[in-house]
Each structure stands twice: as C-alpha cells, then as structure tokens.
Image (cartoon, rainbow, N blue to C red):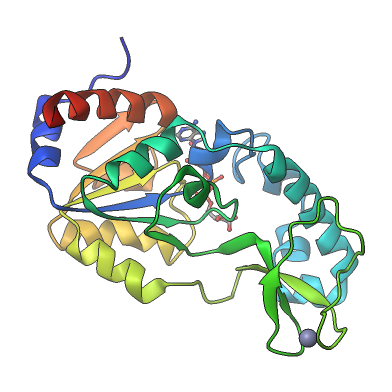
Length: 246
Ligand code: APR
Ligand code: ZN
C-alpha cells in the first residue's frame, strides 16, 4: 500500500548528507489551508493586486487586514499534518533546511528547526512608519487596522507581497547549491525567486525530487516525480527510510 518509492531513490537518500526542501501551499492543503492557484484557490476569489501588494495596502489597509483576519482565523485552526511532521523527523538524520513559501508557521510548529520562511509569517506584524516588529496572535483582530504600540501608525502583516524582496534569499540559494537531494513539495513553482531554487539545485548536482498531486514546470528537470498527496508520499518515503535507519 501507499506510494511506490523507487529503490534507487532510497539508496540516494541513505547516502545523502545535506538535504534542501522547498515547500508551497500544497503541503498545508491537508491541514485545511487553501492553496492559491487552481479551482477553489485563494486567488480565485480575490484580486491579488488589492490584497497582496503594497499599493493595494496603501489604498485600502482595512480591506487587506480583513482579508488577512479571515486567513488568520483559518490558519489558527490548522494543525501540522503528517507531511510537516515527517520533514521534522528527517531533520534529525540530515543536515537539512526547509525553505517555505508558506506563511502559516506549520513547519516550526511541527518541530522543524532549520526553516526559512521566505514569504514571512502571518502571526508577525511590522510598523509602516517606525522600526517596530512584533507578534500578534489575536484572532479575530480587536482593531482593524491594528496600530503600532510605539508610534500608533498602521501595522502591516509581516508577509511578503508581490514585488517585495523575500526573506532569507541568500541562505536559500546556498542551501540549493549545497544540497545532495533537493525536494520540491506542493508548489506550483511559478513565483520567483523561490521557483528558481530547484533549477539551481539541479545545476549544482542535487538529485531533485518533486512531490505534488500533479506535474508542474519543475517535473521536466526532476530526477523523481512522486505523484500523490504530500502526506501519503512522505509517509511512504519515511517508512522506507525508517526500515533502513533501524
Ligand atoms: N499534496 C501535494 N501537493 C498538493 C496538494 C497535496 N495535498 N494539494 C495541492 N498541491 C499542489 C498543487 O498541485 C499545486 O502545484 O500544491 C501546489 C500549490 O500551488 P500554489 O497554489 O500556486 O501555491 P504556491 O506554489 O505555494 O504559491 C507560491 O504564490 O501567491 C503567492 O505568496 C503566495 O507563497 C505563495 C506563492
Ligand atoms: Zn510604529
């Protein structure tokens, strides 16, 4: 039962030392958090330029904060799933980094330590005027838009919007260059710079392993494309590795 994991991949993983993992919305889908693209995707019902750009925020901070308040309610209910937990377990056996585009914080909650949250974190806020940065876990928000405790200006979510620089880009590219195996899990691989990482990893000699319910642009360069839900694939993979680790 489960997803077929080729013996050759198990062998590569048993010889690997450094592992990089890029994750996207698909890894959190089974925790009940909607993905962005495709039918039923979050961007389907929302104009991206209104809720996920600085320009949109400047124009209507209240609308943007209402959108994020809804997402925060949904994410507050979500728990890490078996895929997040499997990655946290793998970190105990490898020099490993998880590079995520997700803002839900579920990798950290699952116990992964080396996590790069490239697109920020929905529970963090920062001031639009001063240098204040902080955490806000209030669900629902008491005041929309929330205000800075230092200067009373409007706070913004500490997430990366379209056109903004991502967090940890240098470290992420270093991980891609140095990894023996690079996993790409649950991302449509369309948003750069994150989407470049699998190509960099491949160029620098990594075995690229894609995990997704369908093929993506990365599938062409991937050494292994494991089609299935992230939880099923990682369950099957971990079962094989545990047998060998014993
Ligand atoms: N298991 C594995 N993959 C899945 C699952 C699942 N259970 N469910 C969905 N997927 C796959 C889809 O096939 C798709 O390829 O997850 C991917 C989700 O793609 P997107 O919705 O485009 O999400 P993502 O790639 O993370 O988007 C990147 O775009 O809108 C911005 O900032 C936002 O971080 C986000 C970025
Ligand atoms: Zn301030």
